Image (cartoon, rainbow, N blue to C red; front, side, top):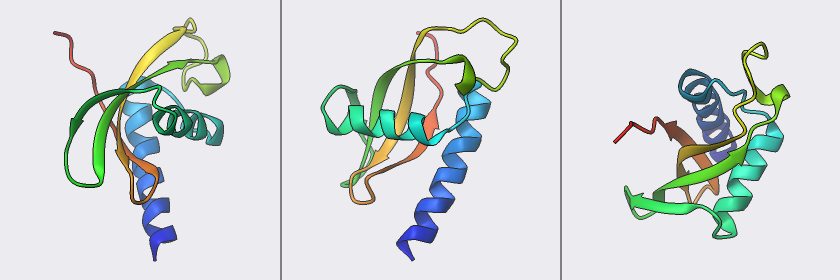
Length: 99
């Protein structure tokens, strides 16, 4: 049951990452974001529930992670993620609105 839920959440996250950041949710990107959160290298933003927390995670984008590879590589970007500490996975990515 949990594996099916995690698969659904990863599909949802992949779709939102494409829409909001123009990035493909490759396994290496997923692992990198989760490792940074678990290592305390992400910036805590706010808690949404007992198990879900919003973090800003810096990521150095590689060309092969981009959906549109004709665009210039942006370099380091900040990705706002919702992380579930019970499932130990990212459940979605949020846009970062300009201030």
